[in-house]
Image (tube, rainbow, N blue to C red; front, top):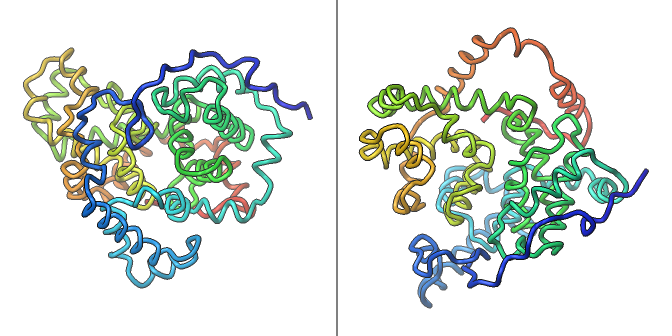
Length: 374
């Protein structure tokens, strides 16, 4: 097969100027960013606390994750509580792989990723090259044109577009892959992307990126109903101002809050999302609107749209937002709303797509893990 054209020949985009970098590798916008500061060990006592937390996690998951399934069976509530408190940054990569099921996919498919990257070509290569410089452009790992970060991102996205040609490549995938690459190597990031989109542990997410974005449409329908039920005053105001979730929430689902939300918050959301599933994306959305609803109900259309795309910093503090998100019980209602949505769209949803056929085929092979509902 024809080898891919080297990325250096085509990739656009200027090199970002050097700027001061925060603890997550992002160029600082504000030297006194309070959310970033809260997540930085500020003194010896905080560092000792962080080291103790890491020791607990290492004891829990074992060497290279060998003990974590045994621990979950014995103490599931303890494991969930620690996930919700936040995975230590030094262990985030391996823990994400374990709780997503991607580690198992990697072990069952040795050499597959390398084969795809070296020998396969993708119809999406130019689209991927065009979008690379738009993915986390302020992060030190991705800002260098033709640098290792952009090259790794290209390889992962190209590999997935080959692995699943029905889905191929869609721009929002770059933020998922980019976030993963900050915590693991290319091959690990690729298999975690496969685990998410094909449904190794939770329901498959590939519908977020298929033609017509069918899963996005379902999620937005479900979210709109949840807003009306949990926040009736705000839901009524949205109706009066003709605001629907597609105007502000699509990116929440497509990028799982990795597109424009503060990095410390995005990481904490991903910790829980990978373990508990997409229901947490809904819970976080409801919590955001709850915190801001007093102000939102006073705004007319244009200012309302702006506010829904630019939440205040205090609303995005993980220690404030996430406990509120956990308080929303949505699992059962999401399933009911999915059934209602499917009934409304029975004609189109009853026709099997090529992607659904492929998923069934993949499930019969070792490289596909069992999908289960959230």
